[in-house]
Image 1 (spheres, rainbow over the protein chains, first blue to last red):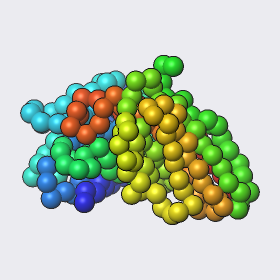
Image 2: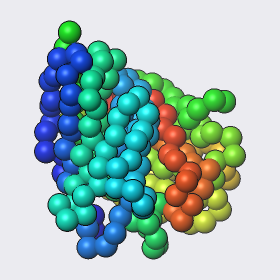
Image 3: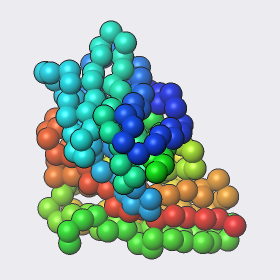
Length: 116
Length: 117
């Protein structure tokens, strides 16, 4: 089975500062990796995904993430955050193939709060 | 519609009552998921529907929980004899295809916030 650990439950930062949200995963096989964002009272939106190829993936709203296989990590970064980035961010994994590869396994989320 | 629609957006119920939550997926999406999001927790998989195949119910936490889907349209999640630990946001998601076709992202609804008093 796969599992996802988001090391920080809350990350407060000031506007225009850089931010990194950490995600580590555990799996005995290769996985696909995802970051989702959830704004208050809304559903989740896909920020970016890693399936294969280049380990640095770029997503929407200026976010990017780097897949590190040796460290089983997929940390999310943004060089300069805005107030509007305040939201909860979820890391998730999925098997690329197999009987239950439609299931996403989520971490517990990181609440990013951007202060003026 | 433009996105996944869930109703009601909020539901307060007394312990022991039954509740029914509704999900309207994006038209044409064959895959439909229900997830539960409890306070301070990640999303827990509940159930998955894909076309006319048998649903994957492996995530349903107890026999008080059940879900149905009519063809490739509306789904309802029913919780019988609600308990306080059922309080959570219930999220529905749909996708054009699932599994091997990884280019079909999940589209989530805004969820139903269930409070059991």
